[in-house]
Amino acid sequence: MSVAREKLVVMKFGGTSVEDAKAMERTAAIVRGRRERGLDAVVVVSAMAKVTDHLLAAAAAAGRDDKAGALAISARLRHRHIDTAADLLRGERLAQLQSAIHQELDSLDDLLRGIAAVGELTERTNDLVVSFGERLSSQMVAAAFEQRGLQGVHVDARTCIITDSHYGKAAPLESAIEAKLAEIVLPLIAAGQTPVMGGFIGSNAEGITTTLGRGGSDYTAALVGGGLHAGAIEIWTDVNGIMTTDPRICPDALRVKTISFEEAAELAYFGAKVLHPATILPAVQKSIPVWVLNSRNAENEGTKITAMAAKCASPFKSIAAKKKLTIIDVVASRMLMSHGYLKAVFDVFDKYKCAIDMVSTSEVSISLTVDSNQQLPEICEELGRIADVKMEGHKALVCLVGEDIRGHNGIAGRVFSAISHVNVRMISQGASEINMSFMIDEEDVEEAVRSLHGVFFANPDEAVFDITTRDVAARGQLVSKT
Ligand code: ADP
Ligand code: ASP
Ligand code: MG
Image (cartoon, rainbow, N blue to C red; front, side, top):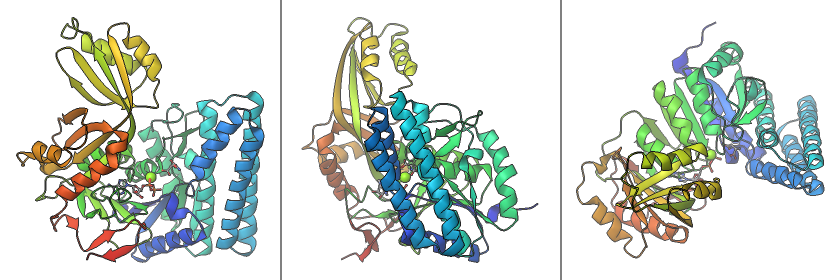
């Protein structure tokens, strides 16, 4: 069995790219385009837009014994999927797909009833509930492809994406995944079929369902691309690519034509929702180029993420912002410089598996920033045994990223004069020298990002940024620059 890996493309379609029958039609047309170019495709899909949020709400309702509320959400999901199937298919295939959807939703209902009866929602059961979104969407897209002559074939992602048992944010086991992909997916490609699998979901060694964390379908695509040694990974979404900032904050954000793996990883980690932060790693390890493309504007070139950064006249490629952060100040006048003290502080965060985004130290204090949805009271209580601890919530991190920061003097001065009206709480220039970040109040984020964007992207470098089009707030639509 031979599959030419350089001709293999892993195509991931996000929630908005499969949000209804029309979107699924567009997805089918895009995949057809790739096949007509002589490429083989493996398709990874998210749940239909907003479905994951609804499933989480249903699980939470069941967990607090609101069985009726949980089942009402599930009933709405049943209608949406059944109606979409009716718009998508005809005849025997429609009947088959609708019966598969009913079966999935019947088992979801059983599960929700079970959770409500026990009155407790565990992380493990929560993962099982949310998995239904991708399980449903992937079966629908596979059926749509089959009817449209694309040889679509559904693969349950949980048979291939093997993970540890860290429910809610499982870590993939890459060699197990590679073996499963070779066993299950490769023969389908070799037979000329188009495998379609759900993103985000996997299973542990015992076959229990896990998930890779919110936004994890991008990660699935990278794992599948890496595991199959694909020629390219394409992340199809609802904007023209990686932009100079979130177009929802700045409607005049520009498309970045090429960006390095390092820059993209930094952006994703510091809040750019367009890519899951872990997506880049499997691609880097195997040097597979990643493209970010717009499923509503498929002709647009998108953003290419590659090993080498494009040389750029402006210091930054993009600005990201991450909200819902908390600053923790740890103050210990006598002990700070003593041997082993920093380790003792970091050990507490490690114990609670709490990732720290930014650190700054002074003679007597350490300030750290963490996600607000962590076990902060427990962490602060433990830290309280070795220092005075102060916690401040509702903070946000703004991060400017670009490999060309290195060559520019006086950047910090330009950044902080652009936001001189905003109260800045912590500042850091990453050791990687490709990001400059600072913490501000959540309510100041939009204003700060717009001011910085206005200053640093007023005269964009045409070699790196697409200045012929500007993404407008009406997502994906294109207007000429005036
Ligand atoms: P999908 O459902 O396709 O995974 P997401 O909603 O997860 O899509 O990611 C796409 C969204 O990311 C865009 O609609 C945009 O609002 C947001 N975004 C944030 N930062 C950026 C950026 N720098 N470039 C492009 N999009 C961004
Ligand atoms: N459906 C999942 C989520 O909404 C995964 C994804 O779309 O990437 O988080
Ligand atoms: Mg996403």
